[in-house]
Image 1 (cartoon, rainbow, N blue to C red):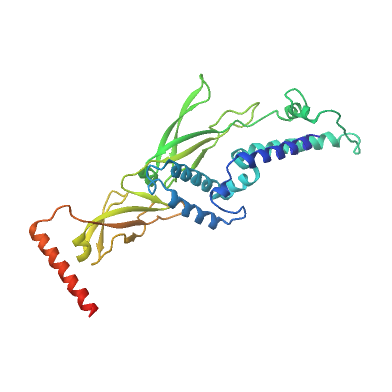
Image 2 (image 1 turned 45 degrees about the horizontal axis):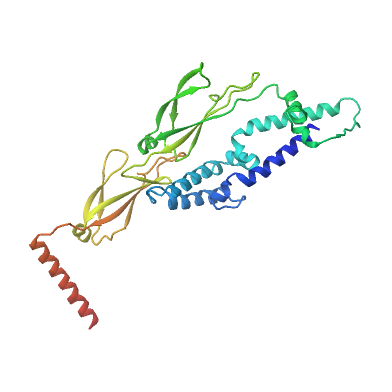
Length: 329
């Protein structure tokens, strides 16, 4: 009987979830059987489209970027994805749900294995009474719920881009109730991304009747950086170059998060919008190595010119006209 009730409950929850809860696959515009490389590619494509640096002041784009980051955080990790596929938005409580399912299966087995193996059961009355606060469903689970794991706690932490690059620590206050509070120091690894979830085992709400404590989940929020924008594991930066330098070629200094500038040689006739890639100067990659620094050239036109400079530009303009005229002949 318990197993039947549990199945009814799970089916009911699945229907409610499908109607009201966001679907991470739909957010990333993917099918449920998408491969891990497809998930990674979809995240990068959508993150570039909705990144706050690309859409300054657009709250809707910022919200979509957060949803995309959360979807990738779950689906991009095979373990998290497996839990999400099975439990939906309750994927973080997968251990608890599996433990509850196991207890209910054991309870049903023990109940029907005692005595006559051919015994059956019947139920007369309103099925809804099984789910009331004083009947059926609650009482059945009370008999098997001697110990339960504590709830997880979630807390958002703000991280600067430089802290994400170098790694950092945070002192986190834990307040389970008015009389019991403490703090712990947490290591934030290098290369954390927007919306990344960092699990601190056993620092959530205490369990019941000897059950394990829940976990503390830290959710990272990367603060805006005035110089760099992040593109996956790469960093993007814009470099202003005078028009004459772009035409003749020059050296510029590209900033990095290593607190030193790199010399970049621009060839003559460098066009506006051209991107130079400096390998290994981006964000740390979890497995190993670093992403790249992408330097985008922006041509700067002077606000004022001297009379002599104006005369030179007029001569250049006339020479261009003559060159075009000769080509047409």
